[in-house]
Length: 173
Image (cartoon, rainbow, N blue to C red; front, top):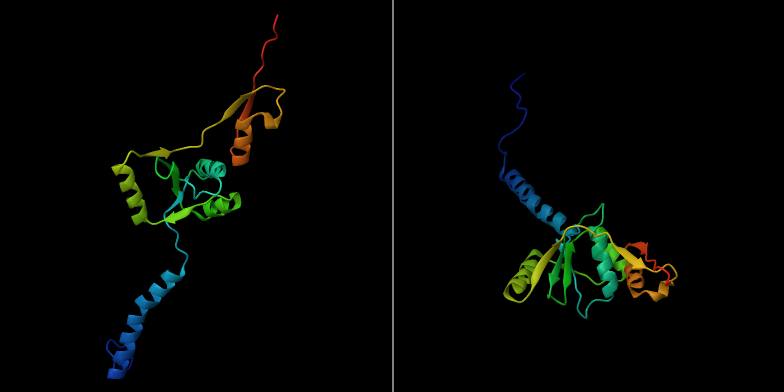
């Protein structure tokens, strides 16, 4: 083949060496810029239940929604921490749903999560893992109006589904 080199393993000049060095050095820098520019979510969202919460009833509804199929997002009830706040996995659909429902939430970093757990550990508090959305049934008399029952009003407002079991009373003799 006439002794032609298919590639060169070392640069011919100092100028080529500088060019090769700067191209290689630019790769990590460009990767860092790319990663910094992408949307990064916290791993968890804190749903406070103290005075900072905009809508307490709907906050319960949001956590119920997180537990429902097909999501089954990891959710924790932080007993006695900020009035019984919740911590759920951070997903775009959770943020969107919270905004639509008017529920306050705060992204928390892994370091903040550790600080929360440490506060809970050192005080009269506990963490309860919520594993699935419960099935709810309400006993109600057949002749009641929707505004007569505070429980059905609260569940409806919170957007928590429930079944109604009619409560019949036997007529008096």
